[in-house]
Length: 115
Length: 113
Image (cartoon, rainbow over all chains, first blue to last red; front, side):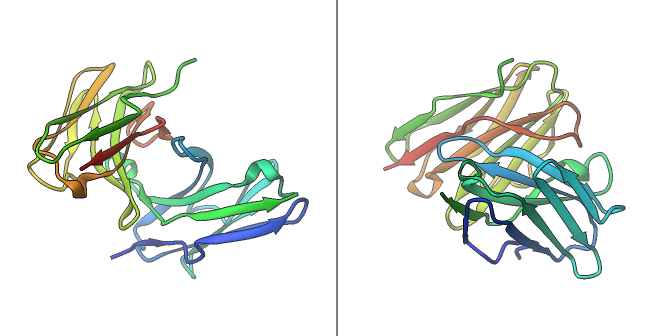
């Protein structure tokens, strides 16, 4: 029962263009969503997050959009840079202090930004 | 400022042997999490602690797995006896509070032959 799904295992874009990574979830109790980036041989690194009370959160080149009715979120990277090449994980968690600690991760999407 | 520290980084062992993975969380963080990443199941939470107390171990796959946190700066994940299907990358993460942003260590790559 995969509650968080990233249907694209890989994505390739040109440097300077926009990268769009998608994530779908099924559990309506999720109310906080995160994106993590992972380089080979390293642990995941927190990138950006969004609460369900918002539909957009922006941090520099990274913007996350949340569509609650569709249970869908996306991460936009503009402009994409070769250093952005990594695996991107979508994660979700529910309300409350205890449940809010339990992150459910998607399968990850390998982003490759070509120079 | 040191991040989450895990040791060893790589471990190769034979089936039936005991394996102990170690984690030092970021100083001042009150919550610690153990994850496992495999090709089949992705990144899954095994167990987490708050103020050194185990809160939820429902992700621990079998009784062969156990975790302890004797103090705020150290945790272990033990597999006894190990099996080939335990081969995976094991990550430790810590956060300032239970629902705070989790910071991951570099992981321990375990191979059980």
